[in-house]
Length: 134
Image 1 (cartoon, helix red, strand yellow):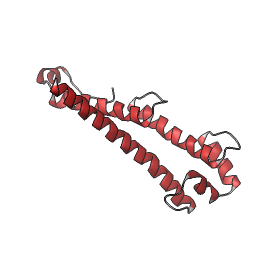
Image 2 (cartoon, rainbow, N blue to C red):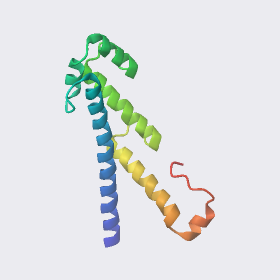
Image 3 (cartoon, helix red, strand yellow):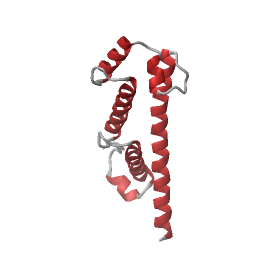
Image 4 (cartoon, helix red, strand yellow):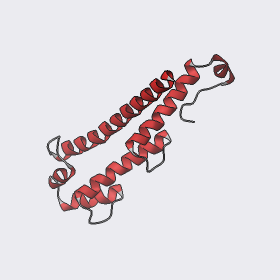
């Protein structure tokens, strides 16, 4: 019983760690956008947007698939949503998954991959090739 509780705790910790990694990616995208337009690194999407003009905002909205007339917060949220959805697709999560769900998917796939490599020898012999994303 204690082993099961410890395993659940470890899975929760791993999932939270993956969530934190993906949130850092999302944060890095915002920081990079700030640098590109000359805003301070810690700037929010509204501040980033104020560094540019309406034409750029309109073009950015079109480029990311946001509605015409979107403000910078809407454009930024759309970018973040696209990044999250794209990452979900890459790891095999639901396209509407949040960072925590994406982290859990990565955790499960990595653990399955590692189990296939280091786990039960009989299972390992039965498989020709290990694909963690299958």
